[in-house]
Image (cartoon, rainbow, N blue to C red; front, top):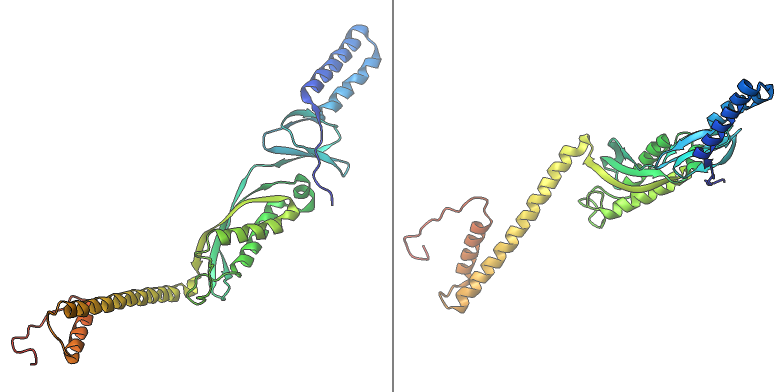
Length: 284
C-alpha cells in the first residue's frame, strides 16, 4: 500500500522570472530581429502557465501525472510543477462533525438516543485522496457505526446493571477514550486523525423515556427514605442512651417501645407531627 510522500516543487517566483524572460526574448526576436525561430518561445510560455500553483497554510496539493501519484506539496507558498500534473487541493485544517442523535441499543438492550461531536483532520493525503471515494462522507458514516459499537458496550446507567462501574451517562473520559479508539481504527484506512470525540447528546428513546423517568424518581424517593430512616434510628438510639446516662427517667420496655414509636413517627413523617397532650397519668 502506498503512502504519502513529499514532492519538492520549484519556486514559483523563479519560474515567473524565467517565463517572463522567454516571453520578452520571443517578442524581441519576432518584432525586432524578425526571426520566425523565436515564435517557438510563445507556446512554451503558454505551456508553462498551468504549472503555477499556490498552497495556502494548512493545505496541500496532491500531484498526479497520467494516473500515477507523484507526491504531495506539503509546504506553503507559490510553486511551479510539471504543467501536465493534475493538482488536487486537500485541506489539513481541523474539522468538526456534530452528528445528529441516532437511536441505538445500550448493553442491556434499552433504546437510547445518542449523538457525538468529533474533531478530525486529514493526516495522510494519499489515503484520503485515493483509498476512499469521499473521505468527508466516509468519516460521517464510520462515525455512526462507531457510535453504535460503543453504545452497545456500556449500559445507559447502573439502575438495571448495578455491577457496571462504567456507564454511558457517568463514564466520562473512559467512554470518550473508547469512542476515540474505535473511530481511529475505522478511519485509519482514510488517513484521518481523530483529535477528539465526545458524547454531546444522551437520552432514553421517546417510547421508554416516561417509564425510565418514573423509575429514576422512585429510586430517588427510596434512597431518600433510606437516609431518613437511618438518621431517625440513630437519633432514637442517642436519645435513649442520653436518658439512661443522665438518669433523667427510668423507662420499662413497654415505655421504651412507645417512645421509640412516637419518635420514629415524628422523625420519618412527611408532614409536621401534631402533638397530643396527655392530661392524665402516664399509664392512661
